[in-house]
Amino acid sequence: MTLISTPEDRFEDVPNYDYPHEKVPVTDDGAEMAYVDVEQRGSGHADETFLLMHGEPTWGFLYRKMIPELSEYGRVIVPDMLGLGRSDKYTDQDAYSFDLHYNSFETLLFDELDLEDVTLVCQDWGGILGLALAGHNPDRFARIVAMNTGVPDGTQEMSDAWHEFADFVENVEELPIDMLIENATLTDLDDEVLAAYEAPFPTEESKACARVLPFLIPHSPDDEGADTMQAAKERLSEWQKPAFVLFSDSDPITKNARDPLRELIPTAKDQPDTWIEGAMHFLQEDKGEEIGKEIAAFVERTS
Image (tube, rainbow, N blue to C red; front, top):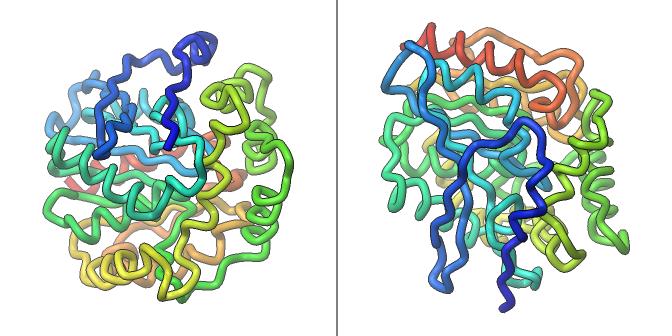
């Protein structure tokens, strides 16, 4: 299967995300996952490690407004999913699978980076995979912050807005990444920011992962990944470490998953019943600085 890397010059004009990045192989055929690793800047809790996991069709750039706040409290690691951002991309949709994404993150986070005591901050697909990773590897994680996401095990109902999104992604001739981001934020995004979301995709075939991700979510208990998610769900129902469910108030795609997630994780109700107001699906774009402060306060009160 053809594997490509986005040329680095595509990222030259990306604003406010000039952190050095690394790439490491995470699959048997050598596909490399990119990540940034930002050292702690402040004098907060020196042992904190924040893992920021993005979703579709974004990349680590989505978290640029939160990194300055969180790096006051610890190390901040922001990976790009395979097929997105600076990570390598298969041009064949059939190359992607739930297990590919889950296993590649296990390889990066635990085999390559050997992360421990992680505060997970996750949204969208980053939440699906991040919550699964936390459920299956609880000793590696200290806290969870789950935003606009869920734990789909094939028994869940997807929202009408999600179905509309999936139909559009499947059928549109040319996938407009910038439009998908713009339609899922309340903020007026300038041309530089929209171009940064388009930057990872020099050709239509480079968007294969963005095209197929909606259909890799387990939609029935027989789908690939359903067993992984069901086992994670069971482990999360016994979670005793701090957890903060932090959804936006204006996201029609995942809003229906918020209360079930808060009910699932026992410690979630120990935290404030907080909504991020004035934000849609990509709440990091709409209210990144505010969310960074909410997470910093969560760390402070649970340390």
